[in-house]
Image (tube, rainbow, N blue to C red; front, side, top):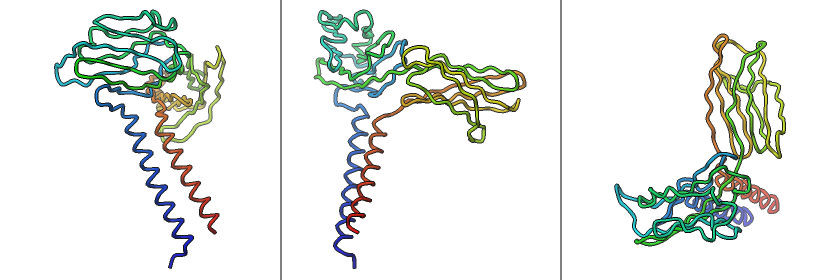
Length: 274
């Protein structure tokens, strides 16, 4: 028969697991961007510094539905003034923050179709933060929050020389790690150099040696926000490459950390009961 301490422990474990599952479910629903009237396909985007970026926000529409009397206001937390405002069929930016003058705009021709996304030109580090897309139209109103994160990332270029394969990437921030992988998935030793070209922004050169002249190697460049998977295929004296980027989902990681913390708590409880 189980002791009182064991009964208490297993009860607490069950409650913690259920509570953890509820937390993960709440986070998943939050990340889905699903709101009754205003939605976003990506509420945790990563923008490439110096590039244009679109903060996605839209009104769900059926077929060729059009929206009437649409007013849109984009704001940013802890910022005086608005990022962008649209009313009565035109922009209305009398109180626009100077940081966004000439850099923020809507796709005005698409507003009547429910596309109220914000285009940010030449993204800066200061642009990161939490934005709110607020919309009023003839059928109701709603808003959605979007947390923009900024990074610098470029696809590497590859060259062959002296029996080695060299990858160069001109701009990465935050500071990246570089890992070379064999076609079978094994990690390969390489020589990597990072040069800080500006505050927290790095140029990297990484050389893998020796290599076979008929293999595909993967150069993985990653930091806490972005991962580049660059597959370089060597054929004789030529190399061809293809790169894909993936981005940190953030909130799922937070959920995982919460579950880990719960497990640690369970272990501590067991230790105390013993």
